Image 1: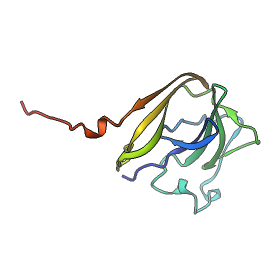
Image 2 (image 1 turned 180 degrees about the horizontal axis):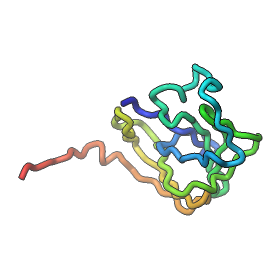
Image 3 (image 1 turned 180 degrees about the vertical axis):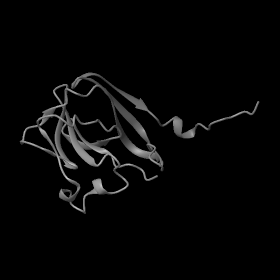
Length: 144
């Protein structure tokens, strides 16, 4: 299995990525589902690196979580961002150097992860987890 492409995220005015892939409400009035032939062959959303068949650009701004743009199997109608009021969950944003690369759809380990907890499009909590100590830990297993 191929590692999956990350969604884009604008956080504090900077473009980064997130390991989370928020779902889309397929019947939302601002989304239009495209036919397969309407998606350009060059789109990353046609590759095995994007099983969800779309790639979104999201933004956290003023404690709100927005979908700014989308490419692939969906098109965003209008130019204004959409408050992701349908989304509740946790966003994971990698930060710093990659400490361990992961294949097969798993997430690589970075120096830090920013976690953003969202409820119905509203940011309720943000925290940072430092992963640098995890790089040196080795898993120990015992056979009983």
